[in-house]
Amino acid sequence: MRKILTILLAFTLILAMLSGCAAPATAPTPEPQPTTPTVPADGAGMVKLGLGHITSIESSTDLGKDKDGKDVLPLGQVETVMIAAGFDKDGKVISVTIDNAQTKVNFDKDLKLTSDIKAELKTKVELGADYGMVKGSSIKKEWFQQADELEKWMVGKTVAEIKAMKVKATGAPDEAE
Image (cartoon, rainbow, N blue to C red; front, side, top):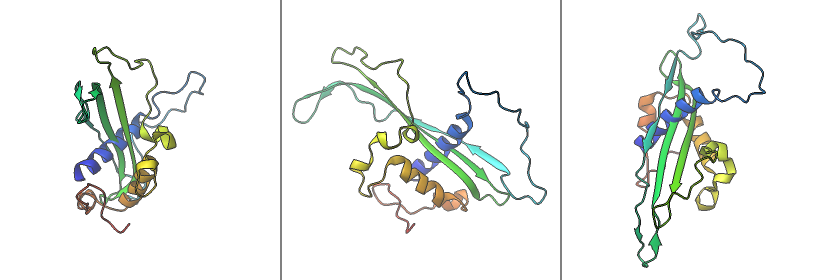
């Protein structure tokens, strides 16, 4: 679970940073922004920004047979968890954004690519309710809702406190909140 939290933190940080990179051609030109963040004289507010991501292909599968002898088609799957977190002068999280890009590349039994390589790929937050996690969730929450609650839980905590979160054997949080 700690690895997942680290991945989520890293994933969110990157997503927040990159979210403004793809503005449509019709969008108004944004006002120039200062190149260095301004910190209030009293030291309040964000003094550090952490960005991170973790990428895994461990959910990819090879061509094979399942336990009933049915064909299992190969699948290339890349999971990238991104996190952006803002920290105050005491090292406590004051803002955090978590997202996950789950990219699947499908093949047929002859190993011919069947995925649309020009299709727009969306993150789990961008998919929202269309991701469909609620139907398999014991708490009946979508992925983005669960990530939002984790983000809220992280605010006000240090990285050490976040890493110390109690988790169940399944990797799910085991915190009262």
